[in-house]
Image (cartoon, rainbow, N blue to C red):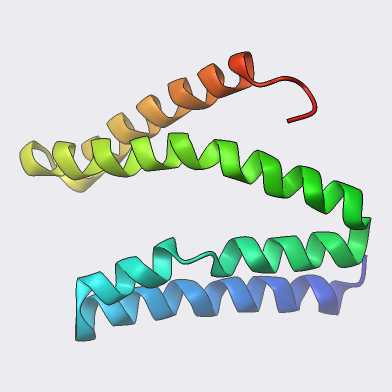
Length: 114
């Protein structure tokens, strides 16, 4: 894989993270949340995967992404409520633990090709 191509992918992802942070801090957290939840990064991942691996792998990635949004939504829900009682690090630890459990459940209930 070309090093420049890989560097471009890292730079684009970094720009998105900086954009989310700046919007949340200086505009409105809702706008940062919109950008964070927007399918921008997934679309980029789909485009890069399509260009490197083709249509079938990209289709499988799209379907898997659909199913694994469920654990991500659970992660966000748990993180929101944990941050009401705990600091950021314990809240993230708890939310990631719940997310990992939800991912394991998804792996168990989804067929191999989904």
